[in-house]
Amino acid sequence: MAGIAGIASENAEAEVEEMLNTIRHRGKESISIFEKNGTTLGLVWNESEDEIVKKFLADGAVGDNNGSGHYAWVKPENGNFKMYRDELGVAPLYHGKDHAGNICFASEVKALQEIAEDISEIPPGHTFDGGNLKSYFKLETGTTLEDNPELIAVRLRNLLDDAVSDCINSEPVGSWLSGGLDSSTICALAAKHVRQLKTFAAGLKGAPDLEFARETAEFIKSDHHEVIVTLDDMIRVLPDVIYHLESFDALLVRSSITNYLVAKLASEHVSEVFSGEGGDELFAGYDYLKSIPPEQLEKELIKITGSLHNTALQRVDRSASAHGTRAHVVFANPEVVRFALTIPVKYKIFNNQEKWILRKAMEELLPDSILQRPKAKFWEGAGVENVLSEYASKMITDRDFRTERITSNGLNINTKEELFYYRIFKDHFGSDHNLKWMGRTKGSPVE
Image (cartoon, rainbow, N blue to C red; front, side, top):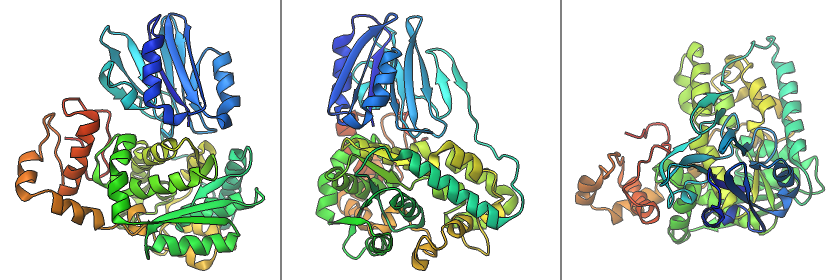
């Protein structure tokens, strides 16, 4: 994905170039810095993004736009900026003020840290003009569809198929494949639109994801690649993962390690990949959702879908961008999202089976073992499970945890594993900053 940055000041080319250099992984091939309406802004991008980037530049703007439902763009306006972020927050965007009080922005926090104070995230579905933050989109249920699961399933499959097709601009194209229902769904649909889809999986030896991914790849006849991960591999890349992820949240870091490694593998073969994130939130894929009364379920789905920008979508963006690739998140397509929110919840969890309507939509396009596979969290399916937490427990003493579990800026560290990650995080980002820009996964709120 492209990287963008800017300062609401003239003659700031050197500062903007330095900002862009910290996120050059997002666009290794091209860079542009220019002044416009009393501001200085720029972006980095790769060849596959040439067409859309040049449209931004022709309009005097910069943006990270990877298709419908995936964009962050900024345009100079009266010596300041007008900033836009997509509905679910697939594309990242942060802002702050430099030491002279000028508004500045960037795709990643690391580009702002040396020049900005009071860094904040632009929320999904919002615009920001340097003073006023305005919402233009709200996640909410639409008019409930006619009570016909057969027709709903057909329409859902067609919408997903169209969304996949819209993302394919050239070949070869690839997809991360965990062997779960969501990633397998996207792979099965994508395989119909290309000569041969390349698929990529990662996990520890014997991990369930590897076995199920092989089965899906064989069924759809993709060109399949995998990386067998060891504990040494995970510890080796951990500092890089935390640097790119910009988080020490234990569950997010844990799930990002194998994602980072599979993204690296994919980048050696393709410049664009599909990802299956968002299906669990839209179609009720988590086991705990079964315990929620049906009349409250939609509210919970909207809540967790609205938090994706700080969890799975952040993982996808940083893992792909770290290796200069573009990730297409099909379930975040606005048409898919709007339709999903109109599906009666009784067809999302039906006969105690999660994501029932999505499974029905994909009948005959996937093997039964994949259609019926229960949800496994990314780090569980990859075989990571407790490997990292056990390693961290050996590295962090009980005394360390007691004395360091409250950080200097008042955050609570929840586990030894999280403290292990936080120490690495501090090496990259320091410990004196206000971290209001950093989200935490459910159950680990920022205190």
